[in-house]
Amino acid sequence: MNLPNKLTLFRIILIPFFILILAVPILSGSVVWAGTTISMTRLWATIIFVVASLTDFLDGQIARRNHLVTNFGKFADPLADKMLVMTAFLFLVGLGDVPAWVAAIIVCRELAVTGLRLIIVENEGQVIAAAWPGKIKTTTQMLAIILLFLNNVLFDAFNIPMGLILLYICLFFTIYSGIDYFVKNRSVFSDSF
Image (cartoon, rainbow, N blue to C red; front, side, top):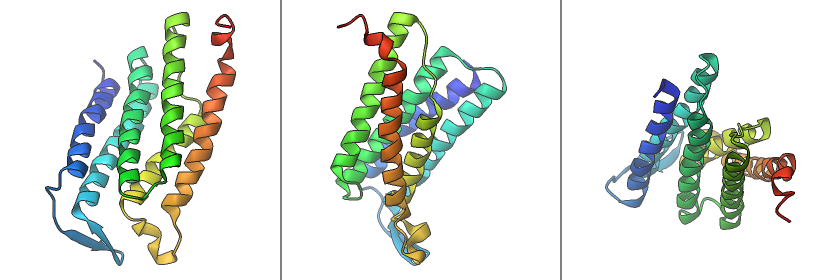
């Protein structure tokens, strides 16, 4: 197992800790940062999320630079991202920070694209790598989630809801990249009808 794949597995392993921090009220207290109060639970969840997100950036960079791109990595890397992001969105909906309809669209797109990838692997034996709209979606998702968990603290002083702005940019690219995947791979379904 190469280093990028180990980083992907590490990201998957971090998800239960992310869930535990948010689901079990074991941390008490809060910190004040830039004039905004952030609960210790949200702060530690954000730290875990940031570490997991950095592994996503690193595994891709290392794999491409050192020619370590594997089918496992092309499959497991986006799957790990989806697991992490869906978990974060479920908790943000529960906390009242993200509208449920936005999270529902994002989750449905993720499941649909994952299903499409599996069909293509089964039929054609190839794994689809992420295209640029999907990469923009992933980047804006990660940044939106971080800011939303931190109560938008970085932009509170300017009264700019940057977390929500990034969330809706993410929503646009979620829809756009989902349509793009299906349009580019419509031939998969041509024999099905």
